[in-house]
Each structure stands twice: as C-alpha cells, then as structure tokens.
Picture 1 (tube, rainbow, N blue to C red):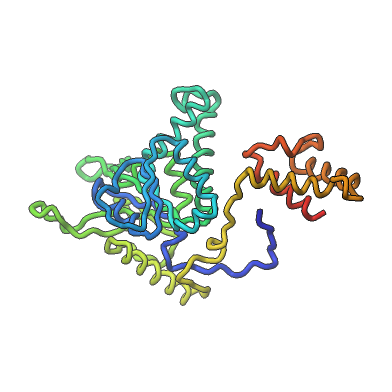
Picture 2 (picture 1 turned 120 degrees about the horizontal axis):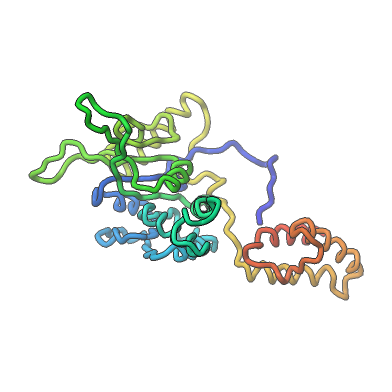
Length: 336
C-alpha cells in the first residue's frame, strides 16, 4: 500500500500517447470500432461479443466474457504485477452487453428478476455502484480504457418543419450506464461515413469528437479537431496537436510516455501474501523474544480499533474485501 506524500507531488504532464486514455468509441456494426481499439499495442480485449476474429494484431490478447463474474475475475487479475508487464490498455467490447451482464449479476445478488423489482430503488443503486466501481478500478490501476458501443438513433423530442421527428445519433447504452461511462471517459467519439458509394459500399470514415445537433460526442481536449480522419494514428496525431496548442496557449508540459502518476500505479498484492506479512509482523512485535511485547500488543489493539472499529477484531479473520484496511493496519504496525 503506497504512502501518500502531498509535498512530493509534481506538476502533471499531459501524455500524447493513447496509453492511459479513456475513450468511448461508437458507430454502426462492422464500421471498424473493434479494429480501431485493437490497434492499441498490448491491449487486453474483454470480448462480451466476438468481433476480433478477423483482426491480425499479434500484440493483443482476447478474453471472451460470458458473464459479469468473468469480467470481475479479469479485473482482479489486473492487480497482479505481471498484468502491467503484459498489457497497457483494456478494451470492453461492447459496453451495452457488459451493462446487461452487470444488471443480471446484481439481480442475482438481490434475488430479483429486474432492477425495478428491488425495494426502495436498491437495484438501481447497486447496479450503478457495481458498474462504476469496476470500471474505475481499471483506470486506477493505470491502464488505458477503450469502451466500444454500437450506435442508435435517439429522439430529440423535436420536429422539423414538415413534422418529422428529429433524431440524434448516440451510443447504444442504457441510460444509467451511459451516465457512468460519459463521466469517466476523456473522449466520446462517433465513427461516421461521408461520401458513401452504394455501388462499392465504401466511403470515407471520420471520427467526430464534438457534440452537435445530430451527433453525440465530446472531449476533454479543448483544441481537439471536431472531425478527424478515422484511424489510430490519426487520432494520436490529432491529440498531440491539440495538446501542443493547449500548452502554447496555457502553458504546461507534455510527454510521449505515460505520465508518472499512471506509469507508477501500484498493483494490488495477493491477499494471501498480505495475510502472511501481517502474521509475521504480529509475531515480531509480540513474540516472546521481544521485551516490548506487552506494550506493542496494546498499540496493535489501538491500530486494529482504528481501522476495524473494535480492538476485539482478529487480523487472522480479515477477509479479502478488507484488504485495504488490513494493509493500512499493517503499515502502522511496521512503523512501531
């Protein structure tokens, strides 16, 4: 568990790389969403639907996901040090199916058939917490995150001069999940086609990054071009240009690598190792060979009470869900 030292913090650097970025990319079926995501080297594709069969990139790995518990197992493994040695980016393909799997998982936990059936809105609350915390866990580990979605036409509630309903294209994500994803990502990009030839069935693809009356999109990069020729390299170049313009206007620093705060994200230790570490430390402090054993035991009880709410709690009974509390108590014990 990393120590916090606010006095050693440095000004943040803006990375030109797509590593460490969080993006929602959406568009029509087979327009190239998954192919784009898989251009990220060292990507782990969590395939809730199998769209990678025709993708030759040998630097990616594809993990089929059938249920939410499968995804939670993947996220748990991302805590291991070898995960950072193997992967830079996690791809979720598609978020619509992932959200449905999360909903099924929550309903099973609550013993209901639908989220609505849970009393006092508990289903909706638990769903939002489960989806939000799981996605955030990936980002907090220092991985980039590319979320893939299909597109759908959404009624604006307005009509044109002829009385026809006006539609706006947006990602096909349930509203609750959409709010969580939209708040998380740096870029919401829509893949559209211009100059489409019905004979050749080809056209020019672009990534739209700015919201408009007909397209749902957005970006945290104030100088990012609103319309970018579609492709991984093209987006990298566009982000780099946007960053350079921002720095020229407002100052700051840029890097071609991951910023330090992402590159040095601490991975989570195996719970069994933490338990063994706690046992060793406890025995060191209160063992027969320690002349301060009685005083140390009283201090340990105070530490345990601070983190677990009672001095009667036994560290040997800590569960994996309490690992953060255990590591905090262990750090205090090592400081004795």
